[in-house]
Image (cartoon, rainbow, N blue to C red; front, side, top):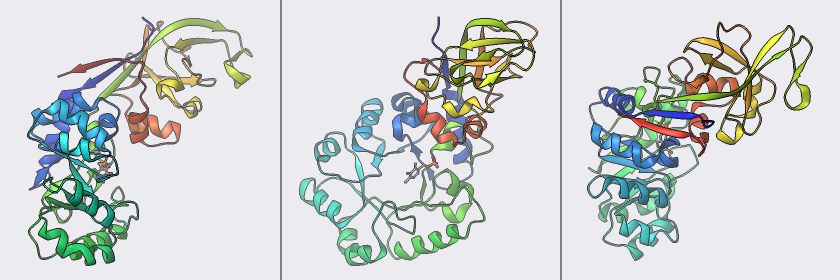
Length: 345
Ligand SMILES: *Cc1c(COP(=O)(O)O)cnc(C)c1O
């Protein structure tokens, strides 16, 4: 067997949802965009629904359709990108809730699906999605008369608790949503951890559910074991891999494992990445990461490994991300389609 095994711990996922939920006094949703942060939208949505989540969020209507198929009727499925041209059939057929981002989207929704639920996304300073305060001021009374089910915004700096942008966006959100009783949502994982001021009626955690920072208390959800295909001995001065970028400084024993950058293990891991033997002995990645293979220095191991772990209890998505110069979100959503995936509950 030369495909690596990716294990997704759905119990840990559910526990992370409960742990975040316990920090709030409001409803806790779940963000399952990008195919459930790369872990399979259907599998994670079902596990989160079993845990108690009733409000799901995706980036695009197409993703919402997949989640609806998995969950069946009942749970709310909201779409951050709103109601784009061409989305009407998906929104209607799968009972999705677009978070409308502009006057144009509002008009499109009212004309094409007047009976459908919707929310409104407001820009409180991130300048990525949502209605600007002036646009909202002009539209607000008309929009509220149509009974939106949610008013939401998104924080730009919530992973830095002391960043002044957090308070500034909080003030703006409170001003923009004052004097009505529509449910409100501001916080993703970072905002949820900023405390009750940021929770309103519903939170939208994503990465924390999947074991990522800034939720430091999260349980790891993914583990990834890479089978060793071949092991060889090198004399001092021999080189490894493309470009001869690594030279053995001493006689060395090198394992070649079966996964590479085509599987989402970034080329940048070549410098500074490690894999783990028997759970906790680190073995440095040496040479360049290639498309389907990575070479690892196992000289100091007591025995030859059958496989090495690159993600799991002893190396988190964020630790690996740091070695690759990126963030845990990107590690998760890069995990490729070649892994043998096992979902444990
Ligand atoms: C991705 C996203 C979330 C979830 O963010 P995390 O940092 O993964 O918790 C919440 N809200 C919006 C608008 C998003 O785009």
